[in-house]
Amino acid sequence: MSIASNIAEGDESGSNPSSIRYFNIAKGSSAEVQTQAIIAHKIGYISQGERSEIIRQCETISKKLVSLIKYRAHKKTR
Image 1 (spheres, rainbow, N blue to C red):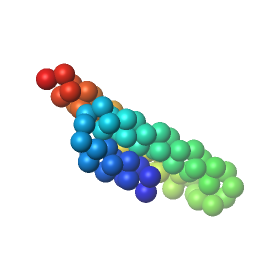
Image 2: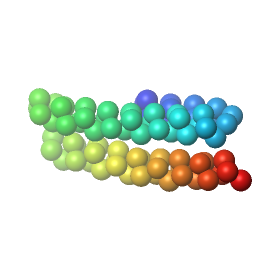
Image 3: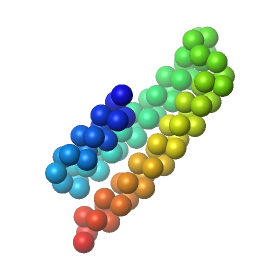
């Protein structure tokens, strides 16, 4: 929920520097979710497959956020 909320807040922030800041926060939230998935697996709350899928999805989201950040940073200079 934090990832999506930060993306939405960044998109509506009204300026590229502010948007980029929120998109970076969303990337941090993605890293937090990955850590939580690792811990959840270690304590037996989720399976290895579920952990792997969560991490895969977070990595995909992070890559897309990097692309979005680069786009917004480039757009800022024009």
